[in-house]
Amino acid sequence: MIVTVTRPLASLSFLKTLLRAFAFIACVSLSMTASAHNVLKSSIPADGSTLERSPGELALDFNGQVRLVKLSLKRSDESIDVGFKPDLTAATSFVVPVPELASGTYSLEFSVIGEDGHTVAGHFNFGIGMPAAHAESGH
Image (tube, rainbow, N blue to C red; front, side, top):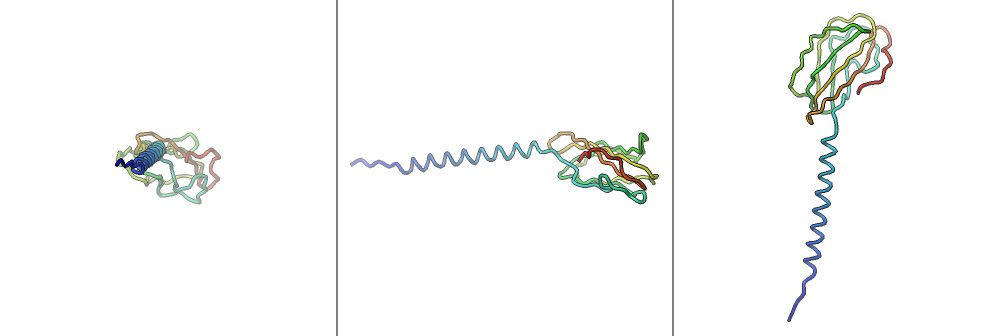
């Protein structure tokens, strides 16, 4: 007597197809994660905000771990020394003390290196005693 078993082969074929589908989904998910760059979630002062007086510090909050490698503050074309020194310690938030700032419009530019190794640059504007300059935001 010869017995033919077809069910296990069909189940094996189904399992192979299922494994391929999971592998494909995993690859797509990993590539999407790897290509996502870090962005500035929020800042103090906020982009476009008008302050009544000088802030004591600037705060940057990112959507993931980054290393802040560049930060510059300008009033019109004048650079303001905030004593920034790059720190290769990764974090999601950074606070930078600033000297007393006069009335005017300010632009803050920054560069970060994300966990994926990509450098991302951004900027935002704020005003003290007057509206911030209108420019496209870097976040």
